[in-house]
Structures are given as C-alpha cells and as structure tokens.
Image (cartoon, rainbow, N blue to C red):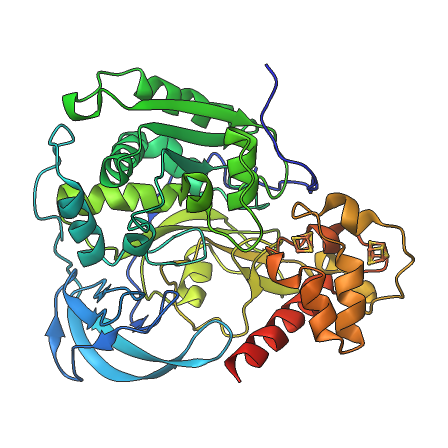
Length: 447
Ligand code: SF4
Ligand code: SF4
C-alpha cells in the first residue's frame, strides 16, 4: 500500500523505544502544585480565588474573560498557599495559584459515560469551553475558538493528528492504544459540532499497533447519531514534520493551505489526539481539563515513563518519579527535540500543552558544534523545508538586519519545525534567526 505523505521533511531517528511499550501510569501527587493563569494562547484567565481558601479538584479557579482565552480549574483538592508570581519553564514569572494538595483526592467525574447519547453543537461547544480545553500538542490554542469557524468557511473534513512525529514522544501513541473509544467518540463529537461529514485519523506507519487498534474500534457498532459520518484511518509514512497541520492536510486530502491562511480556508480542521480524548471526557463526563499524559524520557532519564499528571505538577517531581537523571543532562526539553524549548527552571509546572519532558545527555547536545560555521550554500535546508522556503536566505537577511527582506522571503510562513537546522552541515541557527525576523515584523506592525 502506498503511504500518504507531504513534500520535503527529514528522517531523524525516532528514539521512541524507551516508552512506546510503557502503559500510561498515574503520577503520584507532589507536595505542592502551581497552576498558571496563562497556559494557553490568548488572554490569561482572571484568577477567582485567594490565599488560604480551600478548593476541590475540578473547581474553576480562573475565568476566561475574552474570546481567545481558556478557563482554568484546580487539578487537586487542597488549600491555596498563595496567589503569586511563579516561574514558568523559561523562567518567566506568571500569575499562578499555588496549592498544597490534600492526602486524599476525590473524583471529579460528574456523570456516567454514555457514548450513544447525541448532543447538539451548542451543547458540545459549551462543555468544551467550560472544561477549559486547549490544543494539547503544544500550541495550546483554545479549542472552542477552533470549533467556531466563520460562517462562510464550511469545514467538511476533520483530521486527527495521530502522527506524533517528534522523536522520543509516545503519549499520543499510548492514548490511541489505551483510550481508543474516547478518541473515536471525541472525533465524532467534533464532526457533529462543526457539521463535517468526513473524519480521518492520520497515523505514521511506525505505530502499527495504533493503526490496528483504531481500525478495530471503528469497525464496532456505530451509534445512530453518527451513522452518516464517514471515518477512516490513514497510514502515513514516518517522516518529520508529518504532524504539521498543513503537511497533514496535504498528505491526507491533497489540499494546499495557502500561505498565512488557516486550514478552514480549504475546508479542513486538525485536532491533536490528547485534545480529542479530552473533548470526549468533557462532554460525556463533564470533566474539566486538569490532567494530561506526559512522556518523560531521553537517555539521561533513569526510568522513562508515560505519566498521567495533574496540571501544575513540578517538572522536577516527574523526573523524581522516573528515578532521576542517570547523569547531569546536557539539556532538558519541554516537548520534543525538534520543536520543543529548552527548560531553564525544573521547578516550573506541567501545563495543558506539555506533551513531553526529554532529557538529553551532554554527548547528544554535541557541544563542539554549538558555534555555527558560515553557510556553504549546499541548498539542503531548502530541499527539506516543508513550507518551500529558502531558510538560508531568510537567515542571511536576518543576520544583516534586513528584516523586511526576511519577511518578503517568507519568514512568517515558517512553522519552526527545525528540519533545516537538522540537515545544515554548518549548524546555522536558522530557526532562531527566523524567530528573530518574525519578532521584528510583529513589533513593526505593533508600532
Ligand atoms: S524554514 Fe521553517 S518551515 Fe522551513 S524547514 Fe526551517 S523551520 Fe521548518
Ligand atoms: S543547509 Fe546550511 S549550509 Fe546549506 S545552504 Fe542551508 S544554511 Fe547554508
């Protein structure tokens, strides 16, 4: 069978074997939790609680006051130690509710699961908004906004991104194997919500177990409210960044999202696996987004695992549960090594967009090559760019402070996948240069 794919991209080693076969396990409660009011794209939530108050797990503690924002809930029952500025993973201080959890925690599930129950679009959107769901692949864009496209944009196809193309991460892979029923229910709810009749679950061919499991779930009896929906599993070649929104849409639908436009422009909507499972839980169980699966892995971690973690848990606690570092790591990354960010403060908390914690050894970080060499004009960066850009040219303009030229060369279209950096023999910091060009363009627009 010919596998679906996109043009460009790279084949980094996947490094998934450390956790791919490890079932999701519950992470024990830490002694302290810190829940930021800003865990999403958009306005931070308005804090609703004060120091000294007692809260219960699932209680709303932050209100979303603007359209692009998300509700925040307490992930534990306990007493609020403070409402103060607390560091996030890049050491930026953000307003956070710090809670000392009780020894015993109640269950926040409010109603029994009934996947046969049909609902209308407004009920589904209201449940998603109330649950504070955002994109859990890392972008953390409020899901209810994504599910409210402009009336003139008809979306016919929903794609679930089951690629998990970032090396090391396996949290979505495990969810596809262990929460298959919720995944399919979540997809059907999304389709019902935006009145789409076609659904696709894109899975890279390095996860045959997930392809089999999801296919067999789809072959079970379909609830009456979903029996007009057409859903299929799409095996994709294992290539990075197969899970990029535009790349996935092209691979499956052969539709090209124009530069600087959203997938709704071509009638498509993409959702991450974790988000889709959370949608089912919010709608069926009335369950707010207060925990998520995090892959804690990398060669510097002693016992890599997939942990179900309460939001606000310190990253240092996750590392402790995984029996610590084998040796001082060269770098600890939030997300995967291609698109993720270096963590500067291990006491910072897990948030809604934290898919993985990856600890690399000093050897892997490859210190001698940190200093980049001049461009040798090999053209490899352009060959692999999935957005058809010439990264070396954008980098050149940025280095010479020619930000307008960098923008004209397409800096704003870059999805920051890191494929160009991966192949560059001169180790040019192309993504950083492109981010600088984007920053310059944005501040010019603001002024
Ligand atoms: S220029 Fe941007 S989109 Fe293209 S390969 Fe580099 S990081 Fe990826
Ligand atoms: S891959 Fe690196 S060396 Fe080659 S053209 Fe691009 S920036 Fe220059």
